[in-house]
Length: 336
Ligand code: ISE
Image (cartoon, rainbow, N blue to C red; front, side):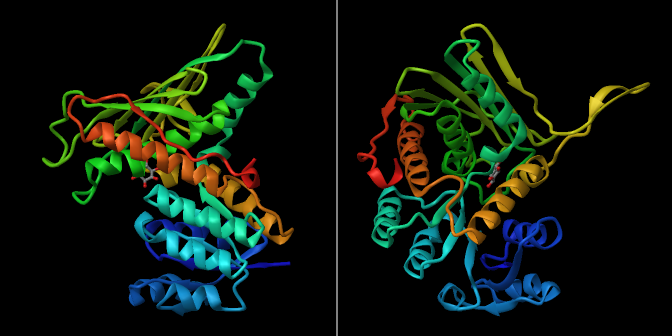
């Protein structure tokens, strides 16, 4: 069976997913594209012979669309995710699931009413080979428990429209989810520190920031979010166990040693660095939809990440960088 996919959002991320589904993966076909920007929808859809819709309502309601990918801005995700649930269609929604915990709760309520897990949140790092190897080392248990995790999330630059809040809800949200997944526990406290700012930032931006988080069992996580690096897209993570330190290097590229030195090519974006992870995430989702099964992160994961974001933003907005408690509702059995 070919899974007929509708894409909502014809921006850079949506187009990258469209290309991967068509050119790199199997079992799925993008049959419709919707975007409030009609021209963007047309230019994304035309090369693939997909239908164009101006509204997500029309796309979700199309009986020839089996499942939906949402790649719009976080602020507009919730109503579209709920529409998909009500139509009984699987939906892979780019992160964040929604920008408020209230909206995430509404999504979970709709899904529980539907009686079926339909929502996958696009936390692609869960499919990255190196993070999976790191998790396997932790779970093998030979080096004891996790004590600390050090993360670096660095981008070459960000546009003027990128705000300080986005350092948390658009960038650090990846570590927030990845750490919950890696360690298998919730984050309960968070603080955001503001070190000296880079001169390469737009004036309105606080950059870099350091997000410090604590899990239920007391693992301390730090995350340097530094988004005007100038020289590369660079992701690093070091998991400190009782008798080992597991390090995830910053590039998923081959290493060259020659007369010019010992080096590897630098990634320039997340699409480049996480190409393999995105492909695995989407292939597993397509395969699962074809089997009528859920896969990947759930609405609960989306909710928990947004709740940590809320607490982190509260800390960021207070110059004293307080340690803020993360408030979570009781986890519904549906997501156990
Ligand atoms: C972007 O939206 C992403 O998801 C990237 O992974 C992240 O590195 C970047 O900072 C975000 O703006």
